[in-house]
Length: 102
Image 1 (cartoon, rainbow, N blue to C red):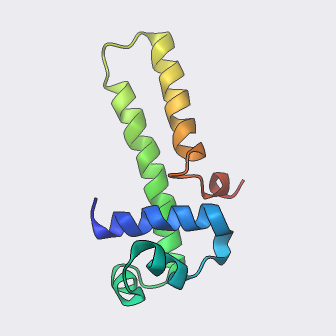
Image 2 (cartoon, rainbow, N blue to C red; image 1 turned 180 degrees about the vertical axis):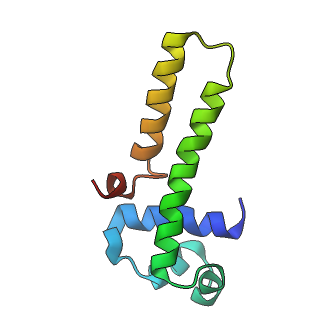
Image 3 (cartoon, one colour; image 1 turned 120 degrees about the horizontal axis):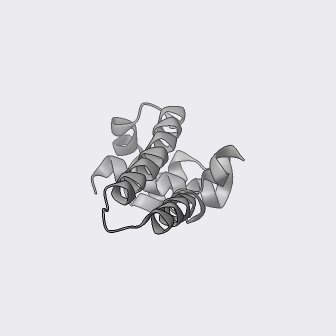
């Protein structure tokens, strides 16, 4: 996982714990890095947040592709896994983002 992904994963955790009121200081502390390093990767908190939402959707798309490409699954298992895997990404701690704004 590269630094940008680490920052986005930590952003998800901070958001899930504190909502949008988390600070860049909170994020830097969680990561053990300086705010300067974070701002070198993302111009501001809004950009970071928007890219993190896109990152979550990309994770969902990736998991769907893995299921679609698995030729060993029959139709029922295929549909079941696709639904559960997408839901799991949204509901687990990794990509909740308050259910993408509810």
